Length: 170
Image (cartoon, rainbow, N blue to C red):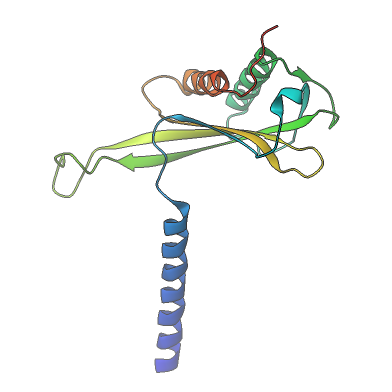
């Protein structure tokens, strides 16, 4: 029985250690901003066409369609043309997630209870069609809930593409 308990305790400590290392290596949680990352030695001004990479689908197909349409609109605004299949200079995909942030630097609203608020993260990636390595990643983190999610997502996408490198005008 002691061996079983020790094995259980050891595996629990191992999991806790892995989580601690993963959290430490993940770095600080991003704040509410837009971040654009371009792969080194990539001239994104040469990208002229893109195709969609099939990815996850949201639980709300209407929101998924609106996000896709907003990305298409912004891709066109930066001078890129959508093509069918995987024939584009880049493959485009996105991922979204939500998290709950806690404001611990204020007075608690009750004993050991601090204000919480939902935060949405949206990441749009332009991938190399051959290697699937990211060429450009656009990320926005924003507090959500005060306005409809569709408006928030559309605004996040517009803000991300304002910082798109090599932005061209038609």
